[in-house]
Image 1 (tube, rainbow, N blue to C red):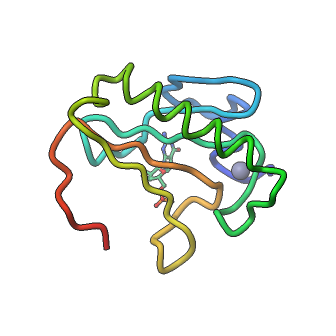
Image 2 (cartoon, rainbow, N blue to C red; image 1 turned 30 degrees about the vertical axis):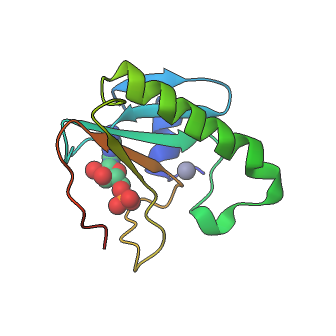
Length: 114
Ligand code: 5GP
Ligand code: ZN
């Protein structure tokens, strides 16, 4: 989508600290990290949120979690622990309308999730 900020990052039209890329996914550092490790893992296909997922996206969603697992290990938070978050819609606190998964870790994140 032409005016989507994450699509622009995928197309390299705006810079990001990219840490992973393959045919269907990219991962880059969040511009305003809330934890020592704060990475966004996103599909290259523009979808606004979890609400847009179809059966055809099942493989991509599986790949996202496999990449998250690998990045957690590479970034040194696999053993200490981490959190994966996908905010969706207004009540979910979603600000960027391109489906993304936050990978957070590197400090105790507490128990509050809502
Ligand atoms: P949301 O609230 O939609 O789940 O999270 C969007 C995230 O995207 C926020 O944590 C925000 O800091 C991050 N973000 C927004 N714009 C940019 C950007 O241009 N570059 C990067 N790297 N992260 C961004
Ligand atoms: Zn997009």
